[in-house]
Length: 176
Image (cartoon, rainbow, N blue to C red):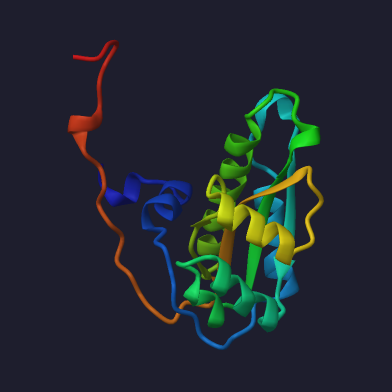
């Protein structure tokens, strides 16, 4: 498909990359509000919206997370991180909070990219040590389960879009 025919939303999706290095420029409150508006616009099972979000800017807390999550070293450079959590008491359809919060996490990544920011998805759930460590650090009540953590900042690296389209993964009507 010629690039001029691809609309802006698809360009944003295709060009988004995981960014792990950030400059010292702060992320503004307005940018955070825009990102969180996008996050809360995600679809959810039964429209239950079981998500809760924690915006973490405190450098000590961000640094502490690196001791819990083995792949979180970029938090030392990030302006902030967003913990995406599910409230299991708000579930209308049991177990779907994971999908709902995953959709919200993807919206965070896309909104950050659309704003010229960088972000990366760090998985927490279902790894018990990460879930328990983050829950303790952030003082989460027992009904709130951390699913993911998204560091956000102004990119200090450039990555070209990856062409991940693979027609061999497409199947029509039935499995061949």
